[in-house]
Amino acid sequence: MKRPKKHLPAGLRLLLAVTSSVVAGILLLALGVSALFFYANAPPKTQAGFSPENPVRDQGVTFEYDGLPGAKSALVEVKEGESSYAVGRRLEQAGLIKTRFFWNVLSRLDGSFVKAGTYRIGLPATQLAIRSALVEGKQILFSVTIPEGVTLKKAAGILESLAICGAEDFLAAASDTAILGEYRVPGKTMEGYLYPDTYFFPAPFAGENVVRTMADTFFAKIREIAPESSSLSPRELDNVIIIASIVEREYRVKDEAAIMAGVFYNRIKIGMPLQSCATVEYIITDIQGKPHPRILYNRDIEINHPYNTYVIPGLPPGPISLPGTTALDAAFHPENTNFLYFRLVDEAAGRHYFSRTFDDHIKAGQLFVKGNS
Image (cartoon, rainbow, N blue to C red):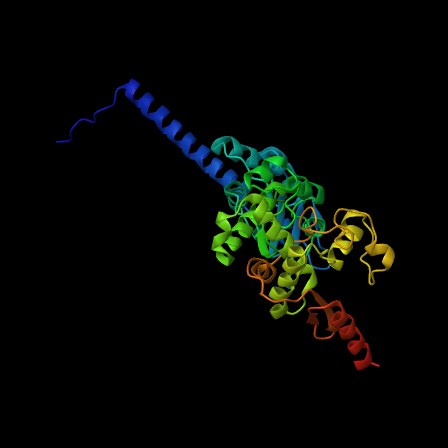
């Protein structure tokens, strides 16, 4: 005997039909959104569409190659104060992302800001990967070598040439009274108080940040070289740094640096002018802005200027270079001698002759000339 079929109430059948339609619609919508997401997020063909023969640098994006077809990575520059939307527009125009509209949606959803700097993006890269790199701020670090003995102006030129920071920005930070006060530097600039070394900076990097990084390194080195320096007043420390900056520009062979420092301290003790050619060169190149002289003439050593140690006894007003470890160690730990003079006698080897009297000093010069005649 067959059981009679039970019929669902009309209202329930309608509800099930509507529910099925809604579920189907949601599934279709989800599939559509997912498809749109994967399409917009996927790397555009243009990421690999350029060749080494046709490199592209556009909108702050540079494509790099490894000799194979297609780009291997892209350098992306985000400017200081630039909005996420402006960055997305540039990335779209450069062909690094498919559409800036998806980029803008991501920006609204997470509310995070892109950070200024230069980034290397491995290709192919999705929008999510690119945005993640720019939001996290994991920038490329560029190697920057500031040689021993350069001046602030020369260091500024190096930093600007490598696009780390502008020369004026760096020099302004190096003479900022707040920074000078922070590091207790008694002079008008941080000349002498920035350690010459190889640094790894992002680009761009504010001049203030560069100065603070180099100053922190300098004082850390000072504590290593001369722990006793912590007991010196700012002016006493400045006097030592001035000597170190002069020694840095005078010595050529490491084992002579401490002897030279001793000579300068001996001259100061008896009121004798330091007579350092390096201070005259500093006037000519950094203060007067002239080319570096190959020879100093009488007119040069007679320049009436506070930094001219031929004319004015005692220390110049401030350091004349960025001294390295050897010169700093020499200034803190000079060799105790009775020498008052030194002169170059072996230009190839960089060796000097040290003497106690002016007569010996002159004879050393004569011997040198005779030895090469």
